[in-house]
Length: 127
Ligand SMILES: [Zn+2]
Image 1: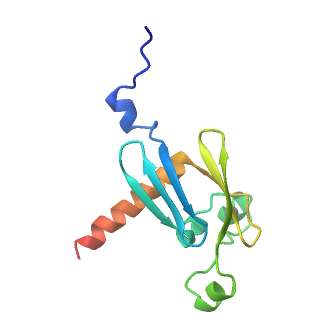
Image 2: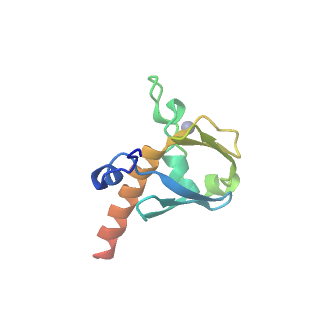
């Protein structure tokens, strides 16, 4: 008999993984995590956090994040997902309706985004 069960510590740590993705191409992505947590990412949030070099300016170019505070820009190019592709067992690639598709969202990154939103929700609930 082989022992393949993870210890509780491992389950809480880096081995968290999405058990289920619910993709809505016009509103966002929901994720059910292996520890029972639930993420609800809007399209704007995901695009804002696109980790690719073009969006983060990793190659010395200035970041080119979209300005979602400008309602005219938002209206003109209403953001949509055209496709979500699984990448190995560690990430998803998101294709956008403006042709952008270089962002690879690792599960680790998605979980970090989840924690960030959870913290925001907790602090806004206090007000
Ligand atoms: Zn990008």
